[in-house]
Each structure stands twice: as C-alpha cells, then as structure tokens.
Length: 331
Image 1: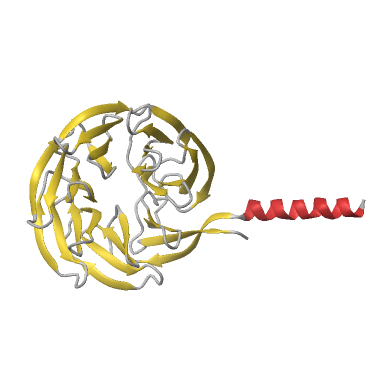
Image 2: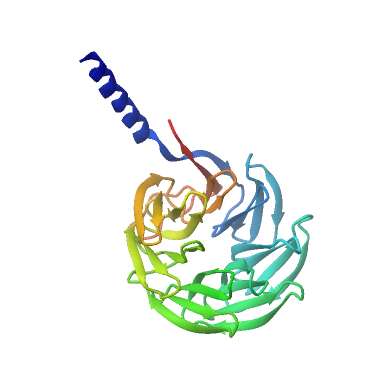
C-alpha cells in the first residue's frame, strides 16, 4: 500500500512538472528609437532587426547593440549571402534593396526592385537574392555579384513570403488570393496555384525531408504537399500570425501570433500527421520570429501598446521596441 502511494505521488509530481514545462520568455532586449518593425533574422550570433528606417544589429546572447544600418526606410526583411559575406534588406518605401558588408557594416549599394519589396531571401539553386514585391505582385531576382535585377517573375497575387526547395522549385504565399503559387526557377514561370482553404497566408516554411509546406494563415497553420499542392492538414493556431519557422532538429513548427500574443507549437509526427502541442504566451504584437537552431532559441520583436480605442489598432508606446527571447524550459 505504501509503495503504491509512493508511486502515485511520484507520477503526480512528474505530471505537475510536465505541466509547468514549456516555451517561455526568458529575457527581453530593449532597442531604442521610434518606429515599427517587421522581420528579424539571425546570423553568426547577431540579430538583424528591421526597425522602420534602419536595421538594428544586436548581440543575440546579451542584447547589446553592435551596429545600425541607416536609410532603409520601410524595411521589411533581411537576407544573407554567405559566399560574398553580404547582407541585403528589402526597403518597402524606397522600392529597393540595401546591400552592406557583414564584416564592416558598410553600405555598398542600393538595388532598385519592384514596388514595396517585402520578404527577401537567398535562393541556393539560382544563387540569387529574391524579393517578394507586394504592390507590383512580382518577384525580383537579384544577381548578388552584379548587384542588379536579372529577372522579374509575375505571380498574379500579392507575394507575402517565399521558400525554396533548393532544387529549382519556389513556393510563394499569395496573401490576397489565399493561395500558394509554385514557380519553376528553370523557366521562371508559375506552374501551379494551390488553394489553402484558409485566409490571409503570411509566413511560410518548408521541410525538405517530408516535402511539406507550412503556411501561416488567419487562425490556422495549413500543411501542403509541395509536389501535388494537396492540403495535408489544417491546424488551429493563434490569431495574427505573420511568421512561421521549422525546427528541423526536433520536427517542430513555430508560428508567431501577434494578436493573440502567443507562440503556437506544432509537432510533425510524419509527413501526414501533425499535432498542436500548445500555445505559449509571448506578447501582443509579437507577430514575426526567427529561430536559432544551435541554441534552440526563438526571437520575436514587439513593443508595448496603448489601450485600444474603439476599433482602432492600438498605438505603440514610444520607446518600447523590444525583442523577446523565448526558450524551452523544464521546471
């Protein structure tokens, strides 16, 4: 009887510990200066944070400022070319991309693109920098060696974010069409358009092992077969998702949900089976994110807000811009 009591007590204690375990905000990095934000990216221990008219560079371990890239008005995204040791920012209000040296932070040039370049990334198959141009509904392919656009692809909708399989296939979330467009980078043509069955697709991630796409939509994460376009799964997440990343080491998908102020975590059991593990508190406004595989750390930019007035969007409190550092803790 006593042994049974001890066993029950041990199981209860383990269950209580498990309930307290999860993802939580470990610390907060304050970043001075006014203005909004969009994407955040990690590179070799540094965080590159879009911040209205500039990019703040901070030490990912300490939060200390280590640099600023100015004159990137309306900056959305950040991308890196490892071979050239360069960084690229998509400047939405300037309709161009800023190129700077990663070693010195010296601005090298600016490259004109389509209108309102938003997401930006390095594409390994073509060895180009690609921007998703929201207003012109195009993709700009930039030759990083020549610093010029060498190809413009019409996608027939507002491209919010794109991912590559590294083999010549590109997948683009079309926010205004509620679709994913498949692009053949050998012909630079859209070859398919797949309905998501959900609205407002924004963040997009890809698992090369299972050939699955993860599209963050309004209240849902939609999983697509990247070959057929078939919807594999549709899972509930928080509201206001604008970022999705895939943790390859643990087969986890993270979505940052700015309206709900939480982080949804989904497990990929196999190519066709998924489960929501939980929705973990972050902060209102934390709608984008980046993930550091080495430290298993998630970073989300946000700010503090004034109380909502009627149906208006809450205003950001001056001087409260910040980056949340989220880790998994077993308590």
